Image (spheres, rainbow, N blue to C red):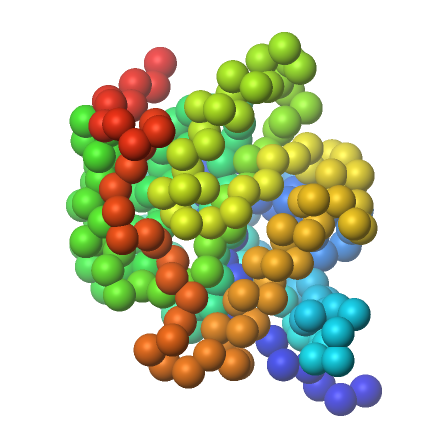
Length: 236
C-alpha cells in the first residue's frame, strides 16, 4: 500500500479535561478504559477520507498530538512544550463542560501554540475582552470540543451550553460537545461526525491545496463576548 500524506493536529487543553480519551475515541473508535496523565506528548493517528463520496476523495493520515501539562506551567516547561508546536496544520481546543476555568484557559493555550516564539503574557481575558492582535498572522483551522457532557444534568445543559457558546464564535470555529465514554456522539452521519469531518477537510485543504495568502482564517477580525456586549467573565 502506498504511503499516505499526513497532517498534524494539536490537541490542547487543561490537564484532566479528557484529551487522551478523546484522541483514543477519534483514532480507535473505542472508549479508553483506564486513561492516565499525559507526560510530554502522545501521538495517535486517524485515517480520514478527504471529501468522502466525491470525485476528489482521497485518504490521509491525521496525526493527533495530545500535549500534556498545564497552561500555567513554568516558562521552562512551556519552552520544552514549544517543540511540539512546529509545523502545525490544525488545532483542537478541548475543555471540560463542568469546569469553567478550563474554558477560559483555551485562550491561553491558543496563544502559547500559535505565538510559540513569544513569551506568554498570562491573562488574556480582561473585563470581558481579549487582545486579538496577539493572534494576528496565525491562520490555522480550529475546532472547539467540550467533554463530560454526561456529567451535566439534562435540566442544566441548555444553561451550560449557552454559557460557553461564545467560544466557537471567538475562535471562528465549529464546536462539538460530547461524552468521551460514549462512541454514539461521533456516530457516522451524526452532526458531530459531520463537523469533525469538515474540520479535517479544512486542515487538509490548508496544508495541500490552498496557496499562500489564501488561507483559512483562524480568528475573526472582531471582538465579541456574550452576544456582542463586553462583560467581565467571572469564574467561581
